[in-house]
Image 1 (cartoon, one colour):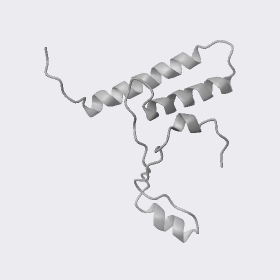
Image 2: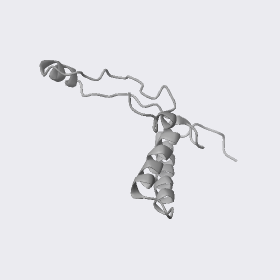
Image 3: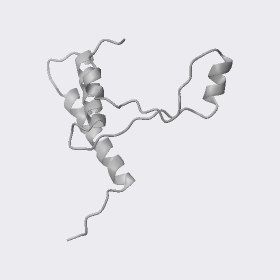
Length: 101
């Protein structure tokens, strides 16, 4: 028997990607659904993964703009993205079907 340890980055990445592959295959093979319904199902299922409502833990989504983006956007009179902003401090899968504000 091996001693318990934390998963490696590579192991977690593969678990995540395997789950996404399985999700895509599941929705692709459902009969009697439109392409839109299947695409929505895949998107909703991926959000569930990110939210931690599957067998995997939750994953944080943070904004990671290029260091030069802020100055570029300011020079062009546009809004910019602040680095490290956490965008999933909520349950994204519950927000998915809500009307945009």
